[in-house]
Amino acid sequence: MNNSIAYRVYDFLKNYPPFNHLKTDDLLKVSSEVSIVYLEKGDVIFKKGDPFNNVFYVVRNGAVTLIHTTNENEQVVVNISDGGDLFGLRPLIAQESYKLTAKANEESIVYAIPIDIFRQVSADNTNVYKFLITAFATNTFDPYTAEENSKIFVDYLPNTSKDIEYFQTANYTKNPITCHHHSTLKEAAIKMKNHKIGCIIVVDDNDKPVGIITNSDIKNKIATGIFPIDTNVGNIMSTPVITCKRDLTVAEGQLKMVQYNIGHLCITKDGTENSKLIGVLTHHDVLATLGNTPSVILKEIKRAKRTKKLRAARLKANHLLKSYLEQNMPIGHITKIIAQINDAVTVRAVEIALKKMPKKPPVKFSWIALGSQGRKEQLLFTDQDNAIIFEDVPEEKHQETQDYFVELGKLVSKSLNKIGFEYCEAGMMASNPDWCKTITDWKAQFGDWILNTDDKAILLSSIFFDFSHVYGKKNLVDELSDSIYETLEKTSMFFKFLGRDALKNPPPLGFFKKFAVEKDNEQKDLFNIKNRAIMPLVDAARLLILQNKIKGVNNTAERFEKLADIDKNNKELYQSCAYAFKALSKFKTKQGFLHNNTGKFIEIETLTKEEQLKLRRCFKPIHDIQEVLKIRFDLKNFA
Image (cartoon, rainbow, N blue to C red):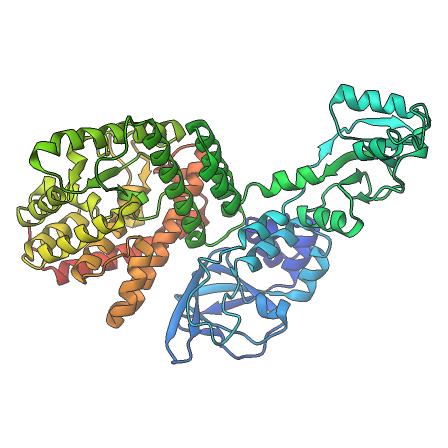
């Protein structure tokens, strides 16, 4: 095929799922049929209610906004698709009209891919099938499927995570233990005993499976005297065997077991009983695969009696996180799952620590998470930031009570460290008496930070303003929040200091649109995605949410989405900030897995042009939101 345009399309698509799962020849067939659509900002690709086209779309350059129109005719941005993202696929599969409107967010190039040719080349491709199932299970593609849905639920769909595990390739036992069809049952039983297995596959002279013997067969047919121990295995084996191909999914394996009321499947070279045996899938294998789901991990955490077990469960969550990222699941959905797991780990760590304490807590208390965990944004292992609020006690009991909770804090922090959360270098942990106070002392502390503002107060308070209740008496946290907002009404200067702090990292592009990289120390020439891109959005969202007196919304993306609801004049900007924050978080997490670190520092030269473009697209909202802060809080001349 001498078609340079098709080759350029191929060269782009091969980097993104599900196209990266297609064979080269198949992807070239698709690429040769692709139509290229050029869009100006505001151009509409399809509208809600339009009949579906026979194509779905992939963004080549630029970005496309997917918009849901509610019954009240309100326009809600569902998602912003950029390079490599798919949209418009669900209506083709479901054979229904479009439920969303797709509009170019900026000047863009979109590939229109005919569904017929895509179906032809992917019909027997398990990996493509798994990708599509995952996407539909989480409503990644066009999440609104009914008019009455007026909320964005693309980022959180409970009970769908198990569906994702169902469509993983089954992890079966390779090189299974077998016996020849001329063997006696005694010979087969000795093999089963020596290898400590509960079943054995009977094969013929060509290693084709002809039957299976289980412990139940021996109990029911030998122990009862129906056959002697030296009988031929053919007299008691179950036959014919049920066979499957090597790349079967967990769902397919479980379905076969239910269908035939069996607990074992023979995996053969071509999937039939007429080819060589290469493995065995057991019911236990299926359960083991399904064990890596949020619900199962949470159960393991609640049952854990030792830190070692907690660490094992939390490491499973890391594997789950990596799998979700590879399947291109919405980052908001991923974040909520991992946040729930992190909080559950902390709760169990506190419960285990309490059992080690010499006596029960003298008064009610609340364990609170700070920083990224407090914002429900902690994905990879980072350092721990936490504190304790405990009820007021008589002066003579104060030191004794504080000592108790400091000791509890030390036990919990030690446990969290063993699990994988590093100690905070600045000592912002409940094991530090400075961060373990009565409710009255905490109110006074925040009052001092707010009314007697200096640089240290801003540094500390910015971290503590993101606190969230994890364990204990939640009323203490609510009481502290109420006190903070009452104090904020007494001054406007505090917001100016917070605003100045939010501007300390300007947009991370320098002259000629070069990335602003580190200039000295061991991170020289690396891009600090946390400090230069993520934290400016975190700081801006915190400041604006405090100014608007909105309680109970700690997550940065959710803060911007809430601001978009109440400030229609800046709705588009806030939505862009929410999207940019999610994209940056996902990028940082992927880099962390790639380099086995936190993902904080990135070597720009290792990124593809597409990845660099995606990063740059996230920087414009940072610039725009900082300009809003300068005007709103009169910061241009504030030093």
